[in-house]
Image (cartoon, rainbow, N blue to C red; front, side, top):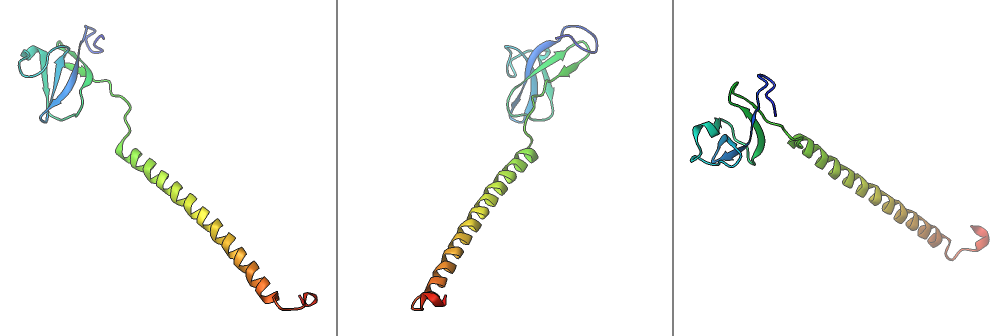
Length: 121
């Protein structure tokens, strides 16, 4: 990849977190035993290694960031799923209740008619 700032070729590597420190390493070099020119230390922490491109001339780094689901988005999807499930359950309970109520009404109607002359209904 060419550097968008100076036009020279960037070095391909990755960013990995090790015990809370974040560092850029060239491909094939890992850990403190790699030379200083092969490492760029950063101050924040990531969990997995991510691909990165570093330009030693302008000291610029490009990190392609994959589209990740954010916590609020995942939470919203979970809440929506639970809401839909509960709503469907409530609708089914309502249908069951209405069916039982209709059955009870029909039973009460027949109980009232029991023992009466059919012509009196």
